[in-house]
Image (cartoon, rainbow, N blue to C red; front, side, top):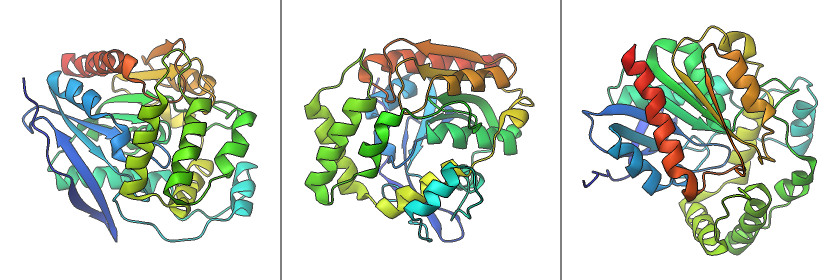
Length: 300
């Protein structure tokens, strides 16, 4: 079966915010919103995974968060000092919050005329998806949170060995590609390795779509200043799946375990050998699990 894929389109979702998005499948299928993580454009949702999901009965919507890809750039300067203060729990004013990013996603659904959707987010996208479910539960049919955490500082921590590679970025296209190869070697799935050739191609595509260090820092501030959602997650009633790799160095698996423990009836899927990425070898696993969670919502 051929899957209909739209061109990349733009949606005004709020004051001075426009999101770039793309769809797979047809609008008469169940809407599934895919939310990407820190600094990642929508192309990090592999088109083959999107097609698998469309074949499973979803109208798949992927998009660039603000400050990523071809979506609007935010305003406000974030310094390393501000990041340090936020990371150590001190008060810092962030350019925008996790709630603002969730509002962007709802604005995209509004633009498409969608009252409610299944929502799947990875890493920071999982934080956005959780926030969407908390703030407007009537609009989230089912929730899938992948390699993410609750916002509680004692879970989902980052491995200290990653800090130098995350702070040291070389300028220019070639520098970005080399840094990406190095980073994904550190945080990718050791049990499901991806070729360096593929990593380089994806990094080049990411750079060409639009990379902004200042934008990624603004997103990072939203992550560092997010609240602990655990108490509010306990009130959720929609079917929920939490997926986490046991080899994740970017967000420790304790973040996934804490998320599943906080949400009543949540399914927890821990995957041996999975790091902080979505390797092609696991696409069928992800697609089946997302479909299974959506079916729980349909059964209700």
